[in-house]
Length: 446
Image (cartoon, rainbow, N blue to C red; front, top):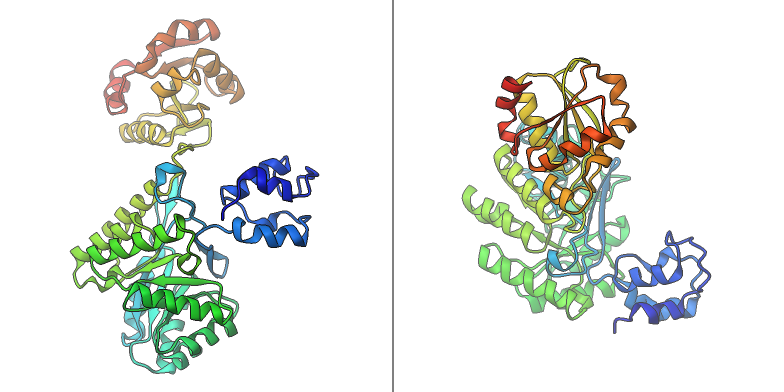
């Protein structure tokens, strides 16, 4: 049974030593009760208390890590069914799959553009997380050659897919120092696959025809000492995927059923068509998949999925922010105007993109409004004349600008009089309400 924060606090040393990274033992206990930290963060808890707290302190979905040459992917540690209840913590990894019955040249040709793909979205670099290599031919040498072909192009983590333990063992042996995901143990080969996962210390995916069989398989694999498990419930269409993933996550979160308290892997690449693959991948991201394996790489598909993932896995309690500062757009000179906005990412990029598109130079003063948009920040008292004036001085704008013109967003025109009092040496102007109207405003009024 889950313990409350106060119950956990009573079992802690209560020294407030801060070695766990929190200011007090009570603060740590509350985080532990919310399953947002692990008990190991406290180095001073007694063995007796550790034994009592171990079950309660574990997140309902175990954290699984993959790594390769400095790249790491984490999935799990989720504590809620719905994002609005708290937040989701670890974004599902997106992988592109290749098969070892393809030629080395074809494998490289598919991996290279996918590995190089990177796009900036509201200040965040979006890219794929890794690749899956499937043993389609059943030959250890061919499988290792395919893995090496991928490794010549990419250093990102791998999923090794197959059902022959001997072939997969050869693949694992070629990835020394890495932690790939081994896929998959079935009711027929689970003992050999569990042995491989134990030998190479890698997470193991398990799959079965029914959820009942999956639970039985999880129990058997854990009985062999395997703790890092990934679940494949087997659904390969929208209905089955949604139903099975939801059942597994509800059992883990609501019932704390440890046999299914693991991340889920989805294979929308098995859908059979581009349209179905796209739809199933989007659903998998939205509904509980921790790893999503695609067969298709196109920039338009991957961009849509990465943006969807970013939107779902952004903490709703923490707005996306950019660093408050003065940004130079189109190589401004001291004679060019200063535009003002807040550090909410979408607001910043809307303004910056519109100004950049005009080709006209300007300074963009991004004020610290705790990540709120202009109107929200103004209503909350986080964006006012005093704060703007402080940021003008904090970022040394008087040293950068000789023609002192500052332009407020139109939505906060009411601040113009107050800002004139705060900055008596500056000419305060009021710009348009919407970023899309900035180009016309700058051409006509500045």
